[in-house]
Image 1: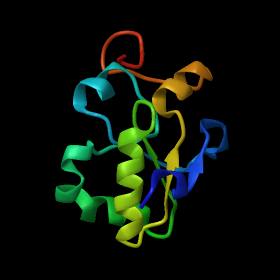
Image 2: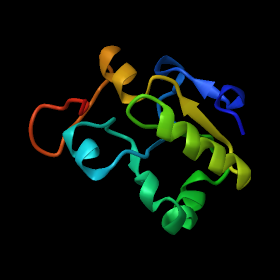
Image 3: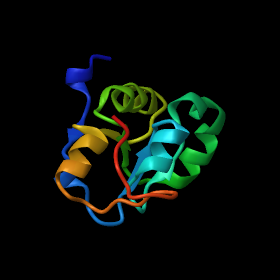
Length: 113
């Protein structure tokens, strides 16, 4: 599946209460993430696919990473498995630039560059 053909949304199009899946690695997540996001690193996706399927149950999975590359790959994989998934264009870089809420495990929330 080509990335250009993937369903895509901007950070502004994500509704409150939407299922937001952050696929970045643990250090990126700890530095700063959306407060309501679910964290399943891309590297753990296959091992945790049933967990995600249970969370999705008829909901659209909004997949986010740093800028959109990893999330595009995950979105494609989820679509192939029959889940309703969309890639978040611009990722957490766009999220932070837009001034949307972020939280962190310790210090001030930021996107690891």
